Amino acid sequence: MTNIDRLAQIVSDSESIVFFGGAGVSTESGIPDFRSAHGIFSAKGDIPPEVIVSHDYFMLHTDKFYEFYRSKMLFPSAQPNSAHRYLAKLEQVGKLKAVVTQNIDGLHQAAGSTNVYELHGSIHRNHCMRCGRSFELKRILDCDGVPHCDCGGIIKPDVVLYGEGLDDEIVSGAIEAIAHADTLIIGGTSLTVYPAAAFIDYFSGRHLVIINKSATSADRMAELTLSDSIGEVFEALDQRNII
Image (tube, rainbow, N blue to C red; front, side, top):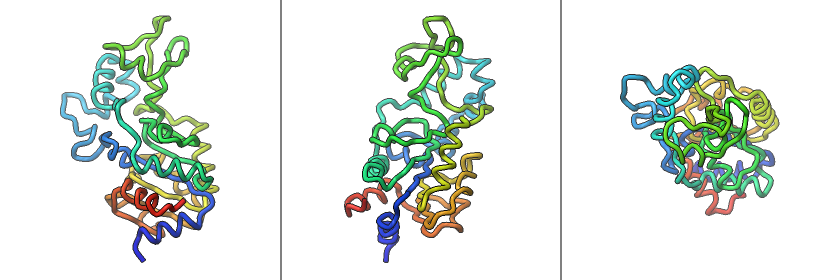
């Protein structure tokens, strides 16, 4: 039995699947990850990217933050790939109960998923730091420099920067979903970013599956590991009509 056969059997037998994903889910849509050789954090400059995407840097050098943010972190033309689309299908038939993602691109929702816990926020939500008014991504893309609200306040993306905490309500929902799942599929993440990586400790279901091109710290606990493209794996399941 091949790994795809085993995964197909697990998905077919499961009634409550949760998918926990990272940057590797979106790289196949043309969005770079953060820590690979060609990732966002590989950019050379006087100031490390990790510093630029921090809360303190945003507050002190908002113009420089937005210069980096627009050029390195926004990909408005990106489209959902096979992984996003297959997960949406699993939700539609009732098998997938939630997607927990570390990504901020909104591609799961664009593919049709509705119960998505975005641990690190979303580029599609932005707010005025003075009056709280909400803005779509278009407002950020359509202006140069620092975007401002009509009230004069600075508009800030609803993404979690270094030095900021995760949203308590989203964290609670993600943990509850993982705790009640009979199958947890982890994909496109090396499980090195905390506290998100620790969420899998709440899983006590039957099947733990990891799909990632490189090894992860949780491989030894998994029933099944696949070192393959997550898009290709899910496309293979989709072609077999495994839902």
